[in-house]
Image (cartoon, rainbow, N blue to C red):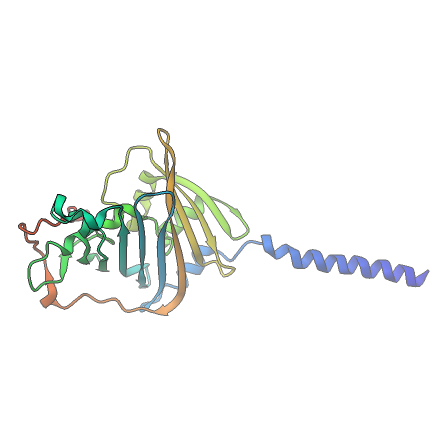
Length: 273
């Protein structure tokens, strides 16, 4: 009888162990915003990679790094490559603008000053210059409108996403109007240079690590008129805390004027200060 009771006790204990080991799968991660703020150290940063997800004739792949200071993002270095059907074969029809859209486009942003190389702007640079300077400038060039304008590595953006999300384990899902996101996110204001219809919302799925740091962010746009977009963007974050040093290009390679006779697309007017 004593042996039987001991057996029952051991089974209960064993069952408790099984339950205990299964629980952490749904346990809350560490506070993501606190985890991000702990990363805000000058000369440190994170690597990000973005790609189009879903059905779309035009797709964008973008990668690069952001550099932090004690307040947030101090600099960024992003290169985007757009794939457009027939882009390489449209040179005779539009002066090469479609083909220029498919060229890699790199944007350095230091503080609020941007330097763009390649892409449509690169096609209109004067001889001897390889970078176009704009101050204040955008986080990305012309190809930005095919990509994303949400960055979970920015504290104000992450705070807004978390406040409007439902959490399940390490996954946060939610939505908000683009208008409200622009109001709270400097990154969005300095990326979204094109016009969106009134009432458009951005929906997201944010997955964080057990330490709370963003791992992936998938976004899609939706509106009452057209519903959810068939395509979206997925951003993957890696290398948190790595040393990052982003500097402006040499002055001798920089210009603030484009050659009007080269027919390249122009960057939109500078974002508001």
